Image (cartoon, rainbow, N blue to C red; front, side, top):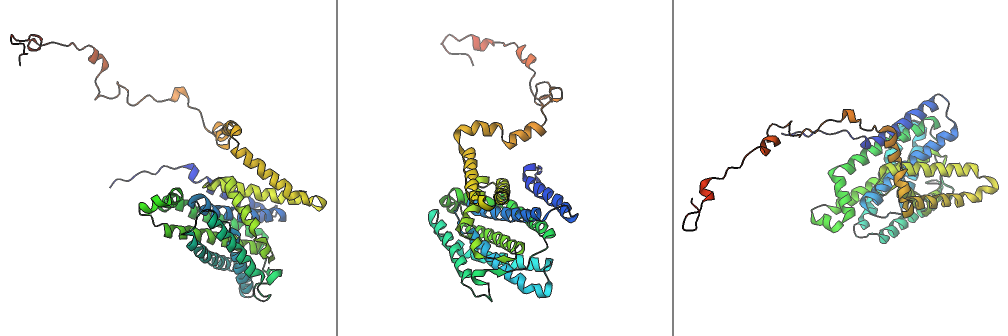
Amino acid sequence: MIKHKKNFKLKHYINYIGIGFVTILFSILSLTGNASISLQFLLEKIAISIILAVSLGLVVGFLGELSLGHAGFMCIGAYIGGKVSAMLEASLGCGISNLLISLIVGGIAAGICGVIIGLPALRLRGDYLAIVTLAFGEIVKTIFINTSAESFGGATGLSTPRYNREFLFIYAFIIVLIMLFIVQNLIRSKHGRAITAIRDSEIASRATGINVTRYKLLVFALSAFFAGIAGVLFSFSNYRVQCTKFDYNYSIEILVMVVLGGMGNITGGIISSSLITLLQVKLATLLSGNLAVLQNVLYALILVLIVIYNNAPRLKGFREKYSIKVLFNKIFKKKADPATVRDDEAKWDRVPTKINVDDLLSMDLVVTESVAKPDKGGEHNE
């Protein structure tokens, strides 16, 4: 049995390294009392945004379906998980056990709804699927806003326990690492190749024997599950969950993170979601009072400039010359030293099975007499 040697590729682990480094660095700052409350809250929002962007990227980037109801799945996780955490607070307190149970329950509840939405996705594509998922998000919001005050709080929202701010963002980034492990290994497996094949051509995928139904349900359920987990983290990050947060605009905002990061690009989704969240928080901090009306204007203007930079044909040369990858290679990649360049292993003087060129050129061609002299009948002698 032949065993193939697996080569280590840094690009497969760069997301783990980056998230792990950020987690360790800010964990040390938080545990030593050097991280401010605003920084801890910002890190919580960034971790939640990364989970939402990567999970939606499964549907939009890898499966090729347009979903506008991701905020609805997050709303389900926030309300269900928040309600479970509030019920368990009396017996378990607001500790790690409460957090784990709420995450599992909220994620599973959102995942079940993802399967329900995945069923019409088997027949719908493009704009029609976007309309269905958009309607689903609005239905979820309407249901929770019309609940009683004893169940889910109604219009005033659901009161939830606030987790310890020093540790919540650490757990949130650990969940990000777990999610990246699951998603990246799924995409690089044969199942991931089947999912991208469905994106490229559903008809060809069916013709080659791919179970399109099963893979669509898998992707929708997994994406909704992680969105529900992000909703549970949101409920632990705030004292009250209100359904007005999970509206159509928030689904568009998550979609913007995916598009700006690149369709089917997990690393780009992580970077774009982090930068957009940081931009929103900074604009809200800097533009307060009478200048608060300029927040959305500047936010939209910055997004437009980013889109123009990423897609303008005239800026293609500038993007290729000053991209992060090119700058990284210039700084860290060593140029080949001519003194250390190895000779070609297939040179004539290294391979003994080949004929020496000098011997080949020195060979004399000898014409035999039978070939040179034809017989009298006009035919050659054999």
